Amino acid sequence: MSGDPKLERIAKGNALALCATGTWTASFAPVLERMVADAEKLAGSPQSIFIDVSEVAKLDTFGAWLIERLRRSLTQGAVEAQIAGLSANYSSLVDEVRRVRATPVVDTTTITITGMLEQIGRAVAGIAGTVAGLVDMLGAVLAACGRVLIHPRSLRLTSTVHHLEQVCWRAVPIIVLITFLIGCIIAQQGIFHFRRFGADIFVVDMLGVLVLREIGVLLVAIMVAGRSGSAYTAELGSMKMREEIDALRTMGFDPIEVLVLPRMLALVLALPILAFLGAMAALYGGGLVAWLYGGVDPEAFLLRLRDSISIDHFIVGMVKAPVMAAVIGIVACVEGLAVQGSAESLGQHTTASVVKGIFFVIVMDGVFAIFFASIGM
Image (cartoon, rainbow, N blue to C red; front, side):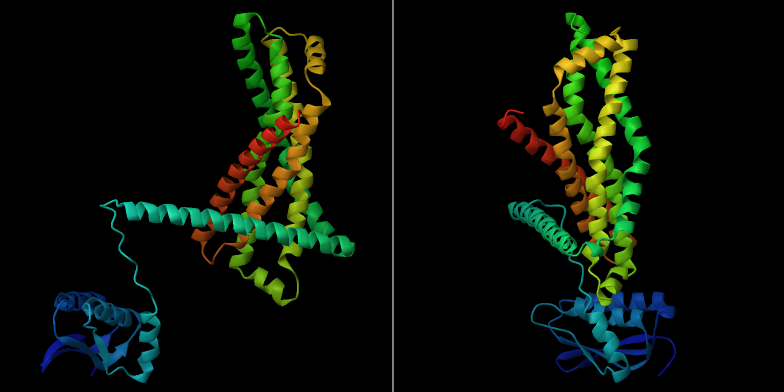
């Protein structure tokens, strides 16, 4: 039978049959939606319900989903609605639709202790999964480094130099500009407050120690996480979406060695250089403001700076830089390889890469502060 779709109710003893006839396709969507909505009102009936589709002339995915939706709606407790008369042509389509899980309805009106504990548990499990992914990536990168040390010819030198240019050379203008401005702001605020006590010159001590030990490398690492970390995630995520990483594995190449290791090496080499340039720019900006705003001569500034800082302050900042670079690179690559096949997933993982990268950079800075304080540096 062909033509307009119909859904008739026929009582058969203790059972109720819903006989579907006609064309059940998307072209009859409004009619089919109304019929199925009316039939769903039978939910809770003590009778056994059969959905007879033997007279359906044409069926597409939309019609198959409506039939499956009707079956789910009429299934209550021990009473399960059955689909009968399904032809071999459409059985695979209905089976495929049946595999689609129904989205659970989340009740947001009530807050229970059980629900709160469940959310806490899921959050803890998510944190554990993130840490496990980072450790796994760290092990894979170390293994790739070992293979490169054994076989130096396997190092992608061209790729490493290319990423070094992108991460380091092209980032120099923005890094120098931002750190210069931060140095100016720190000096201005320090002079403004120290002037009340007649201790303008002590702004040099504060600026030197703060820039070389903390602010210089931390600020540069945060900017690199936002600039290069997000770029790494987006690049690897796009390759994952286009199945280029699977193609590399098919050709016998290790994606970690080909894609991740050159990026990691470039980042580890670039961040100490950027941190040094950023610290110098911040000191220059602070000295300029101290001269123009605070009346501290450049000669006096340099003499006070030499007396207030030591090589230990510089070493502390430079030791932090490569470790923070490794953390940023690992987080970015883990998030990039976790991208699924959609633009939404790419955006979510890129955002997560920046947020997690900055978070772990700040955590590592705190760990280093405790460590160096404990050894007297």
